[in-house]
Length: 294
Image (cartoon, one colour):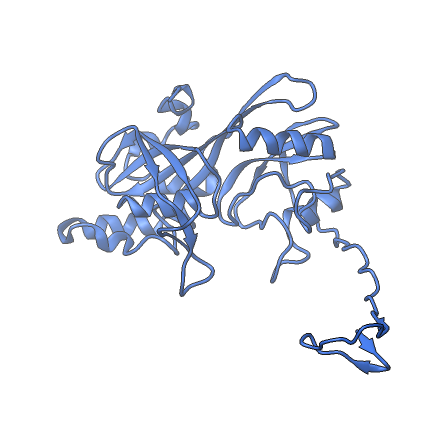
C-alpha cells in the first residue's frame, strides 16, 4: 500500500484527499495433490461416498512432513472422486483417524454428501466405535469420560485435559478383563484430536503401545508381574486402538449403513494374555464386541 509513491506504514495518518494505491497479490493457484499408490480395502462404496478400512501408518490428509504420501494422495492416485472438503487441503475428509490408528473411515465423494455427513457427525448421528486394550482396569463400566481437551502448553504435538479446552465426551465400557489390561468398547460423543488416547490416560487406563500418552506403560504394573507386562508391551507394534464399527444413515439414499472391522492382524500377538482368545479367528466377534448396544 503506497501514497504519493511511498510505502505506508500501518500507523500512517492520511490527510484528506490523499490517493492511496493498494497492490493485491496474485490469486494463489489451487493446491494440487500428487497421486500416491498403496493398497486399500474398501468395505462400502457408491457414487456418493466410500468407507475404507484404513491401515495403520497412513496419514489421512496432507500436512507438514506428509504432503504426498497420505490417504488423500492414495485416493487421488486411485482416481476416486472427492468432495472439495470443508477445510482447505482435506478433500473428501469428513472425519479422521490418527496415523497409527487402524479401522473404518468414511470419505465423501460429493459436496452434498460431505455437508450432510458432517452435519450428521455434529448431531452425533454417526456412531463411531473403537476397540482398545488399556493398561489397568476400568473402575466402573460403562463410564462417560467428560473432560475438556486442549493442546499441550509445552509439547505442541500433544493434547491434554485442560480447563478452558474444547468440550469432549468419550463413552467406555468393559468387554473383557485380563491380568494386566482391559479390552474396552469406546464410543465417541465428540471428535477431538487424540480424544480417546487422552481421555483414557486421564482416567488412569492409557492404551497399551501408545508412545505419547502411556505414561509409564509396563512400568505401571506391580514389580512382581512386570516381566509379563513387558512381554505384552513388546508385542504391541503400535497403540492398541482400532476403529471397529461405524454406522450412519446414508446422506443421499437414507439407507441405514452399519459396518464392522475385526481386530487387525498386526495387533493379534498382543492378545497373548489370553491364549484361547489368541487362537480365535475373529476375537472381537467371539467376545461379543459387536453385539453390544451401549
